[in-house]
Length: 216
Image (cartoon, rainbow, N blue to C red):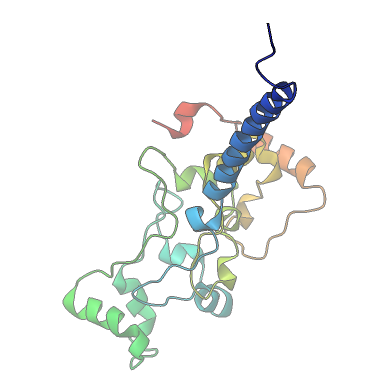
């Protein structure tokens, strides 16, 4: 029987099959890069607020502690947003004619809270407790970045599950002494891994990677 297909057909078929595999792998890889990009995670993108509150000015220049505004961070799952009264503790005397602060003064006058825009927003199916983390030696800057250098607040990390698991799998790399949790200037020591292991033991930190830890 005469040969129907040319001998090169076998080679062409193999090339087509392997090419399709590489194309599919390339597409999946591109999708993976895209979902981890700042375009999706909003990492490093300043969030527009009704009042351009500067953490750099308040934390770095004025030395205000995180807990002055985020009052429930040590005892609650939610760090807490400061009420307008907290702002007015200073601004009833300072910059009282600043046009930037008009929404603050209006909020104080009408008793209507300022509608701040969330910077770090987790999905509804993720449970996160601030108090557990700060009481186990996880510093503010570990998750929120150097807020003392942010004129406008932005997300400092992707907040994706792989990012969280890096710490949950090996917390010794990230924990710090409890008296340094709210420090903006603390830097990991050269022997962080060894020091971290001691803190993990001292603070009774468990490496929790079970799904039900965060997904309840």
